[in-house]
Image (cartoon, rainbow, N blue to C red; front, top):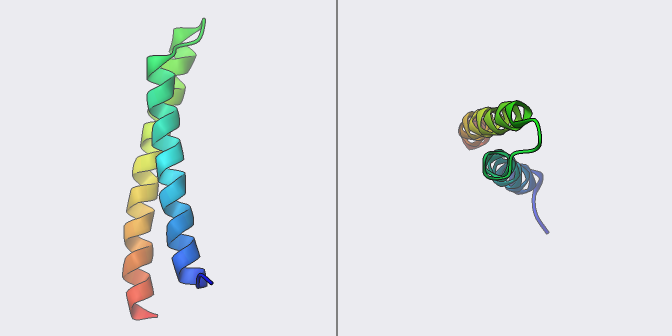
Amino acid sequence: MLSIKSFHIFFILISIIVTFGYGIWQFQNPSIYASFSTVFGVLGIVIGTGLILYLQKVIKKFKTI
């Protein structure tokens, strides 16, 4: 069984993969209104980057717990 720490790290990693995947998908498959796809693509990449920074802080925090 996974500990709460391991599950948290696993869940963040899955979230990073999904958000980057969504951002890339929006760039590759623009909708009728391409500007919306661009905005959502950038948002996916920005949120994915934020999740990477969050993961680094969580790992650092878990080393002290």
